[in-house]
Amino acid sequence: MSVTEDVAVPEPFEAAPGLAGVSVARTEVSDVLGRKGFYHYRGYNAVDIARRGKVEDAWHLLLRGELPTAAQREEFARQTAALRQLPDGVAELLPAVARLSRPGSLESLRSAVSVTAQAIGCKPWTDQAAEETGEQAARFAAVMPTLAAQLFRLASGQPPVPPRADLSYSDNYLYMITGKEPDDRSRYAVERYLMLTIDHGFNNSTFTSRVIASSGADLGAVVTGALGALSGPFHGGAPARVFDMLDAIGSPDNAEAWLRRAINNGDKLMGFGHRIYKTVDPRSELLHEVARELHSERVEFAELVEKTAVELLAELKPGRELYANVEFYAGVVLEAAGLPREMFSATFACSRVIGWMANVLEQIQDNRIFRPLARYAGPDAPREFPGSWQPGAP
Ligand SMILES: CC(C)(COP(=O)(O)OP(=O)(O)OC[C@H]1O[C@@H](n2cnc3c(N)ncnc32)[C@H](O)[C@@H]1OP(=O)(O)O)[C@@H](O)C(=O)NCCC(=O)NCCS
Image (cartoon, rainbow, N blue to C red):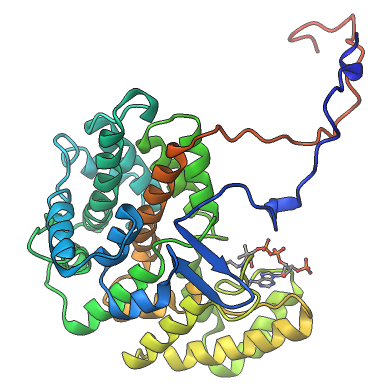
C-alpha cells in the first residue's frame, strides 16, 4: 500500500493561525474574558487582588489553590523567602554570564536559569517524586528575582546585592536592584505591577511552559523555554519598546503624524492590541491609575499618545478593536518605582514565572504530551527520487 493510501484517519481539523479561538487544555489556574475586560486567578478578580494584596497572596493562591489566611501568608512568605538564595555554584558563574550580554537581558537570565536548574539537580519530572517537582517550582519562582537583580548589577558594573529574607517579595526585589530598601511609592508601584502580571490564561509563554513540561522535561527546561517565548517583542519584550516609541515620538505635537505613519507602514504600535481583549485591558487601566497616583512625569505624554493611537487605530484599522494593553503603562509605573528601562522585561519574567509554575504543576497532574499536526503543503509525496543524485554532487 502506498503512503498516500494510508488515510484511515479523518481529514484533520486545521486550527486558525496562531491557534486563535482554539482551546487546547483545561485549566483551573486563570482565565481571561476578553469582551468583558476581565481576568481572574482561580476565580478571583485579579485586579482586586492586585489592589489589595501582596505578591505572596497571589502566589499562594496559584500554587496552593486558595488565598492565604494571615497565618498562612506569614508562613508562606517565610518559606519562600528562604528559597531566594542562589544554589551553591551559581554565584561564581554569574559574572561570566552577565558579561555576555547587556544589563537586564532575558538571554542572560535564560542562561542563569539553566545553570541554576543543573545546580539544584532538576531531573525530568517523570523521574523524580512529585514533592521534589513542587519544591523546584517554588524554588524557581523564588530565585528568579535574585538571578535577574544580580545579573543586572553585574552587567552594569555594580556588586551584586544578596537577597534578604526579612523583606517581602517586592521589597526584596527592589532592594537587590538598587541596594536600598524601597520607599512606599516604589513598593506600591512595583507590587501592583507584579501582581497584575503573575498569570494571564494561555498566553504564549505559559502555553510554551506547558508544551515543554508535557514531554516530561525538567523544570529548568520549562523555565528557560518560557523565558525564550517571553522575550519576543510581541510578548514580554514590549514594555521597553513602548518607551522607545515614546522617545521616538518625542513631543505631543509629533504624536499624530508619527503614529499615523507607523500604522500606515504596517508597524505594530508597541503596547497596543491583544489577542483576547477586544476592549480595554484591565491591567492597563489599573497601571494607568497607579501612574497617575504616583504623578509620574511621563504620564500626561503617555495619555496623549494612548488617546491618539486608539483614535488612529480605530480610523486606520476599523473593526480590529485595538486598545492599550498591559505593556503600555507598565514602563511608566516601573520607572516610577525606580527601575531602569533595561529591567522591565526581566521584572515581567519574575512575576510570570509564578504563573508558569502553577500551570506546569497542573499540566503534570493529568499529562498528555502535546503533539498536534500541521497540514503539509509542500510538493506531493512521495516525490520521485532522482536516480542521479549524489550527496555533495554539484
Ligand atoms: C498582541 C499582538 C501580538 C496580538 O496579535 P494578534 O492577535 O495576532 O493580532 P493580529 O496581528 O492578527 O492583528 C489583527 C489586526 O490588527 C492590527 N494590529 C494588531 N495590533 C496592532 C498594533 N499594536 N498596532 C497596529 N496594528 C495592530 C494588525 O496589523 C491586524 O491588522 P490587519 O487585519 O490589517 O492585518 C499584537 O496586537 C501586537 O503585536 N501588539 C504589539 C506588541 C505588544 O504590545 N505586545 C504585548 C502584548 S500584551
